[in-house]
Image (tube, rainbow, N blue to C red):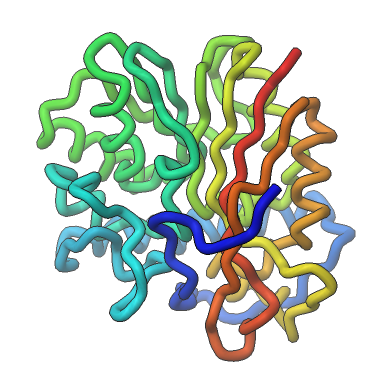
Length: 282
């Protein structure tokens, strides 16, 4: 396990402001109605991002992603070349899962929280025409945007399915790799997400994660309001807790590839952008 500056990751994350207010605080003991409320607010906020993405200027990452002017962009070396503008504008990642491990020709890849599809479109090139990429997202507007992007790009090896990552329609032991970019922190029940990932992966399959975690022994100040949850901050967990959840789901090998401090006033020193790879060994 190593710490350091990861290739092609963005340590700075402009807070994605929700228009739904701060709401009540969310503690560790989430109730069912809390989970429903969180998902409803997240779905509405990211649906709004999808709807407005058509009017945003496209760069290597969207205006709501973790990179911003003066910071390293998430996708470099032509990775995002040819990606539809809508997918770029809707990008809301905190890292680059493609920099963690290599996708191979012919593989079946799933993207948990695929959004506008930027990581799926990059993955589609890596796996080639014999491979298959499946984007999973719970926001209808994001699914519509991603499907439109696939048509624009002429990609026939990519599909997008409306589903929650805790309960996908995919078969057991059917997937070679899962990628996910700044999404699992949004899930109220992370154990279910990791259990679902383990279920659908083949033995030897990889879970490639870019996500925000809390630095060891650091407690953000007042970061559990609904606005912070939507911004990918309120749902973060301590790094070791996050890694233990992955192990608890049955992954035999879990490696913290890199972790970079996230430099944003108020959250500085409390949040890290982490790249993690977990392998299903049995």
